[in-house]
Length: 477
Image 1 (tube, rainbow, N blue to C red):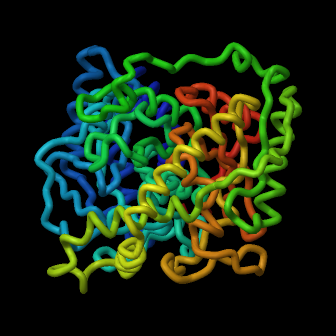
Image 2 (cartoon, helix red, strand yellow; image 1 turned 180 degrees about the horizontal axis):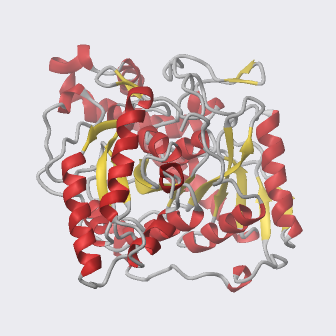
């Protein structure tokens, strides 16, 4: 098999070939690591490559195959892990100079689960400082670039993992999503990205377990790979109160069992807090809706007035950074990302009343989405309002331009479809919808009921079948 075909093979197929002894985990990992070495100077998507560790794990994986052991669903499959998540013996730098020498003593619970499923960690992928913004760059590591166009961003803050998967540097990546940080990079990079229901995937390291709005999940090239990776990651953890529900909700609704969607109602949301959506993004979103309609689904535009609490969401987001990062200012201010500092400064201006009112608004938004999701089986909307921004975009100050018009900073003008569902907890899946007029990927977001990740993934899989995309590859990779 040519190396290029191996690099862009879905994780499910690679694992099947490994189980059948038709693909060596050692050879597979060697091909991926060689590709990483070639691509890293152009993309800068890895903060640390774990070559020796990955090769040792690959040899053990091959020995397990030859001994006839029971193998996990990701046995021998390379995975990258975002630089916010601990991998034992590797640096967890959080995208920051502050943690340059921070070596993790143990695997995060999610890394433990990936390893138990047979996955092989090949490296730590880049993230902006503390995952603060929707682009992936920072003074401590430079700029991560989009493999579809090196002058564009792969999104953020899981941009390193997205750039890696999109360019064939492992078929799956583990990202995190605090305001769209899985779905945004998936949108920019032509990939699948899942933010699960609050508590479905444990968040063991979050500082505010009860008020959490940060999630971990898969970035992949296919919906099936995302579904399998999600199944590996789910389950309760003693450190996350939201994960204590106990019930396995990975059941498919009967109305989605086949390809006749006549019993399904989709609510189409064209805009949230954003003033505009690009014409090419709108057109590709409507083509996705038409694909589901052709299967029998009823599609209706949502005309309800919803307060998407952009301001209140910003209060919660920026005030958290102001409080959390204050401890680092005396020593590290001159080495921190200017965007982090700008968000901290803005967050410090909010009062306790602002913060509590924002928390109340979060409850109001949840109830508004609940009302919609009782009327519709799914909500569908673009994932981003336009294709990937230039790598030079200043997330703190530059306005996003959509079809020639300024539309506010990134959370107002570009990623406004994403953060609301971090606050409400509903599952949200980003899936490719085509390409924009500039040749970069576009994406639709599917939002479902709490605990309905399987349904959301199924609707995405039906779109993937009707409008396949995984065969597309960046021209330089």
